[in-house]
Length: 299
Image 1: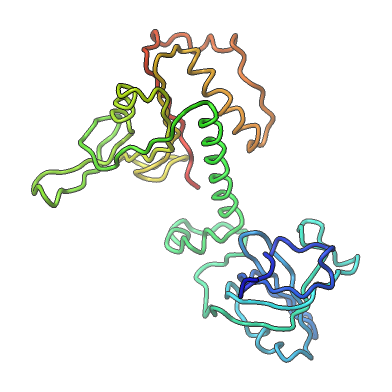
Image 2 (image 1 turned 180 degrees about the vertical axis):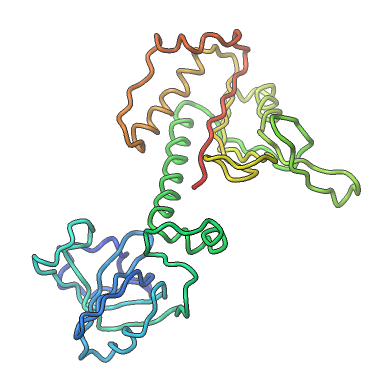
């Protein structure tokens, strides 16, 4: 058993009623009902309600704890009464009766409210990004991005693509923007360039005979930010194929894009039919090597 927890804050259910458990996380909300004090404890996995009454020896310590402090709670799992069940929360049918309470890291004051859903100024959010990323919407965006990338890797690998990481420090290879330059320590007055895309390296891989390549590639471009990009950098699904036609490229990437939108999109999608591809026939005849970048937004 871990010294800090037996379960996560999103794990407990009615089947655990009667068990003695230990949870660790951040104090998300507090509600003082006089003789009863409620704390919503949050971690990466969810939120669990904890309760303590004024007769408990730990009540004063719990009473003075501030939001976003890191604590460990130990106690018995209780079933909530029917009128206090929270159907919107997976752990909403139970609560923890606090028997032991330990403060791991106490917060003095907060520059921004983590539990608030109101919009904050961008300057404040970026200055305290570690707090901003605790907010539910941002946290879910990061988790979603991880799942999308994991699915991309799974689908590309299943088709025989090799994931190969290409160099970051390289010579300048002009694309559609200015390069970011890094001064060389060994060669004063000369500079490396951060790649705007791994164009040259992936084509060298095809020449070297690797046949199918992909990577979740960082791209560095000295340009203004966009709605789907952070200033100066973004990540994209980058892939290359040898000895293939345009139709081969469509057949390789369509199942990947379809699966991403089908699993994680908000609207139902259907696979692209060959007839609907006529709009892209205007492109020049395909070469033997193809590459298609697909941008992955940063939250």
